[in-house]
Length: 561
Image (cartoon, rainbow, N blue to C red; front, side):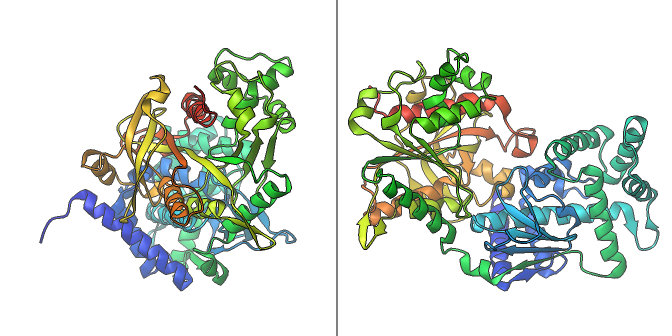
């Protein structure tokens, strides 16, 4: 029998994880302690995701991976015995507490002390993301149980000390904190410093944002739940998928509502007959580039010589810039469809001539002549990108009459993991390769490395659209980079956007000459230890590549010569 390479085994495991996830969605439930749960664990262990570090080492609890997961799951997830995934439910008139994770735009509700309900509005990618994180937590929970309990000897002294610290609500400071962290480090199999670093990270988010329960409570609640299940031979956890969720998958329910409401506004405001430029980006960079200088100078605030310094020095002036933007053609559409994708609609006719930052390369005569409208949509999540773009590019019908938007360009600015470079570099896609499928798309990218004037290191090549950033394996990524694919990065949305754009061209919804632009800045390098997403956000170093891409996209849109 032919020996499979590490990359082949990992790719097979990724497909296996997806297939198992699809099967539990269709069946309607699963137990992590059951056969399917064990198979999901087996697949994730075979994948060995870079983001989960030492997950495969039974001797230690993976702390950086735990931080990453806790930031993206609802507060209290560590205590739950029952989890439910459902489509949008009307929880507004109930007493259930809505919980939004620190770093994921998803809503959960605390149904009971040990029960959470996830409201899925962003499609299959969101479900894969949740199942991946739950599987990781199950793996780490088993490690914790093995450290604190055995049927023969019962619970350990370290567990008793942890329980006392949590239950007695001891004043954890000074020497008491040092002792408690030392004790906890023995349970986790980590050094005192590693344990303290995770404690301080989670504690900061707990105190300032109420985002989690703190490291001591998280580990205690995981251990308590596991001990109870072991002693009672009971089930540790069960997950349900409601019929409403099963019916929603693949039907564009939320994307359709989202796109329709936007088009209704465009019709009501009289903008629908104008030319449109769609930009998938964050909700600050386009606004700051177009309005920042004028808003700050109008408020007698300093305007730096370059845009990057202007943004960095005035991060606390969002209200000033927002107020000015709203008075000069920027309409902020807060999503109410459940898609969690906000939109800015910018009527460029209302931009004040001569008020742009002097580093902006904008042809004001072009704006005056063509009167374009910018539609800036917030970041999608995975396969949700296809649903949103597909619905947005479709014609809109009013009283039986077809209204089609005049789409001139579609620009995608995103974050991605880079393979040949480092954080802060820029990647330009000449193709999108869909991981695990035969769906590959050549991109006629209107952006070139020369557009960036050498200010930032740029790489051009295929970008891999992955099933989930939490499922990435070093060997698979190396294969995409070193093989004839010569991929330069990975992300979750580009291939889905291009699929929708290609479909819209085939269906005649948009012209084949529509300009497409894809540029990504490197938020991480999954091939380098310490540079994965689990190592934390970029912070201020992300300003230059983000605004460099924004400036270039706007220069292209406004036909600067």
